[in-house]
Every structure is written in structure tokens, then in C-alpha cells.
Image 1 (cartoon, rainbow, N blue to C red):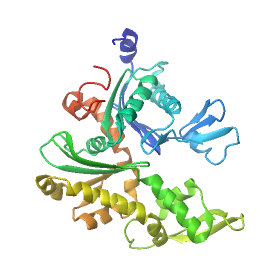
Image 2 (cartoon, rainbow, N blue to C red; image 1 turned 90 degrees about the vertical axis):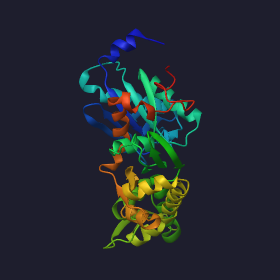
Image 3 (cartoon, rainbow, N blue to C red; image 1 turned 90 degrees about the horizontal axis):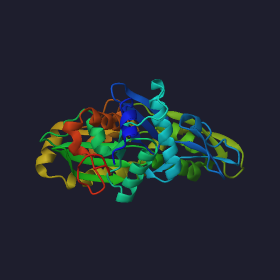
Image 4 (tube, helix red, strand yellow; image 1 turned 180 degrees about the horizontal axis):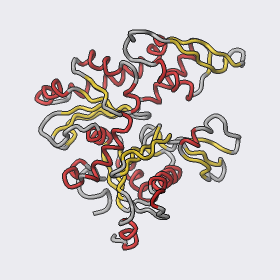
Amino acid sequence: MFNPIDAFLGLFSLDIGIDLGTANTLVYVRGKGIVINEPSWVAVERKSRKVLAIGAEAKEMVGRTPENIIAIRPMRDGVISEFEVTEAMLDYFIKKAHSQLMLPFPRPRVVVGIPSGVTEVEKRAVYDAALSAGAREVFLIEEPMAAAIGAGLPVTEARGIMVVDIGGGTTEVGVFCLGGIVVSRSLRIAGDEMDEDLIQYARQKYNLYIGEWMAERTKIAVGSAFPLSEEMTMTIRGRNLVTGLPEEIEISSIEVREALSGSVDIILDAIRDTLDDTPPELVSDLMETGICMAGGSSQLKGLAERVSEEVNIRAWVAQDSMTCVARGAGKVLEELDTLREVLVSSDDRRPAPFGRL
């Protein structure tokens, strides 16, 4: 339904693309690029559920909050697990993106990336949360498609393109041609699961209990999926499960690679399965164009080399891979006339905004 107030406020609002990730939320503003890149964390009061902090400020509280405050991630495995908290987080990021405009009630057009394997209910939850957060129009795009557009790949051409988008909560594998997804896989195995692998490895091998932050830091610093030219070591700190006392140990990149191998192998299996279902003409294209790796967790050392070795197709990490989905979502609004066909809606037709015909 047409709302004249929304239309008027929309004249002064921005077009924005949002990568609503499990680990981080990124906001792309038309003409400005990425303006927000913050952790998807929210601190709330335990009983009242009142929001106390969002983003980087909330993540600083993780593991340090008193009993009456909890720090949570309202997105789990790429989908909304806490609707009201997600709505508050989106409202915060939308207003922050408009902070320089001094607009108290922005009404932007928004494109939000969603995992390719989500249900209709999960799609609707993202749409409703964005609308409730102040968007006047909401468009949805599947994350692997957004990543391909953000990486500058020609998704509307008659040529096969493959993207592996590895985020915090999900891994999206997709093969595209002529503006559509030909084959796709969506796994709820990604960076978070790798962190959990490290936590379990330290517990089982060293009786050392480490937190999520230490696991993530270790993964980034010395984690790999392929043997390194020069192996590394790192000191990790936690609590000894036998004595209950603080302890630190030195762990090698070889051990970390062993810890991560389970999750990495599952991602490789998904890539193989996707290729197995891809028409031979498109496989021929992929042998020329290669496999584009996007998402924050695609930066795991040696992962592209491991993929190349396993599937016999060159894999390469996109430039600024962590921001590909947000940049792709924003680019859709910049070129809506030509890229409208890549959007999705509740019944998987491809009209105007989701739910707003």
C-alpha cells in the first residue's frame, strides 16, 4: 500500500545493501561503498530483553557480562533466531548509515542477502525484520548470487560461473548462468563450526577449555587448509579442565589444520556434489573461469589451493572477499533495471520487492 509519508522520507533516504551475517553485518550505501562492518552481536538485559549495546560494543562484552546482562548473536546459521533483537540491530545499522544526513526516521530501499537454502518462513522473517526496522521497500537476494555480483562476475551472461561463499554460519555454493542459479548447495558449516572444532580439539588433546574468541583468533592467525611453506605456532590460553586453573599452551599450524579438517572436508564434499550436478557445458565454462571464493572464512590460509587440488579447477579468492555479499546487494539497487531478475520473493517468482506488489 502506498504511504505518502514513506515516499516523502524516501526522497532523503539512501539505497542500502545489507549482508546480515551470523558473525558480522555489513552495510553498503549507494555511492559510498561499505560504511558499516560490525559484529552481529547484541547485549540485552536478561529479564526485560532491553537492548543495551549493538555491534562492536556488544562483542566487547562477550564473556565479561554480569548475571543480569547477556550478549547474544540474533542470527544463527544464516537465519534469524531472535526476531525482536534482529529488528533492533537492523534499526541501529540503518540509522547509523544515515547518521550524516540528520534524518530521524530514514525510509531506505534495502536489499538483504539470504542463504540459498532457507525456508519461506525464514525468508519472511528477514523481510518483516527489515520492514519493521524502517525500510520502505525490501528486496531479497540469495547470498551466492550477491557474492558473484559483488565480485564483479558477469552473472547475466550465457557463461557458467561458480561461487563458494563461506561466512560465519553458512557455506553457500552456487553455479550461475543467464542471471539464475543452475545448481546450489547450502551448508550450515562455516567459520563458527571451525571455531567449535578448535574448542573441541583443545579440550580433547590438552584438557584445555578455550573460548570462542580465542578459537577464532587462533584460526585466523595459524589456521590453514593446505600445508604451509613455513609452519607456525601460537600460544593459546584457557582453563585447565583437570585443575581448574589458567593455563597456556603452544599449538602448531599443523595441529590447527588437523582440528579444522572435518569442516573443511564437508565444504569440499559440497563443492564436489555441486559440480557433479552441473551440466557438462557449464563445467567446461568453469574450467576457464575458475571458482570464486567469497566470504570472511574463504580467507583461511591455503583453502583456495586445497579446493583447486581436490576438484581440478582453479580456485581464487575474490578481492575484499568479506564484503562481496554487501557490495553485490548494493549494486543490485544501483542497476535495478538490469539486475531485477536476480531477486527472489516468497513464491520464488522474480517481481518487484518481496511482498510489495
